[in-house]
Image 1: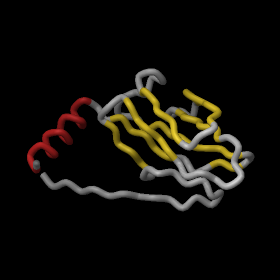
Image 2 (image 1 turned 90 degrees about the vertical axis):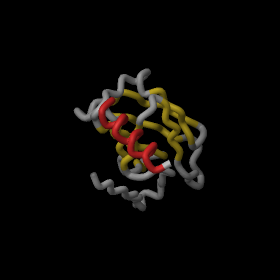
Image 3 (image 1 turned 30 degrees about the vertical axis):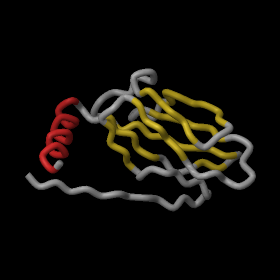
Image 4 (image 1 turned 90 degrees about the horizontal axis):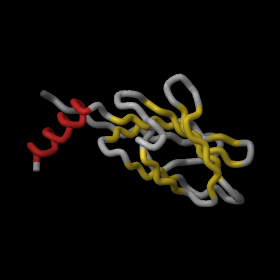
Length: 116
């Protein structure tokens, strides 16, 4: 089996840049999301949408980081959930949070174990 890894980063036209790749694949239930401070911003609005584009979480924040338990917001395995940050009337690009299925997580864990 061959394994390929890549990181895709985006330059946001609205100047709201995150500290994670465009797509993030997760094994655990906990994730820490963060983004760079936008000059002059007083607050940030975090929005998480499911694959059907329904908002499953929305939160106003003073800072540039947020810890999320994926079970608490009912993120399903094998689905991409999209998150974004809004400052004033500007919204960042959307970023994918993908929680791996048990089979995918086991395969990745085994691959990592075989090289350590």
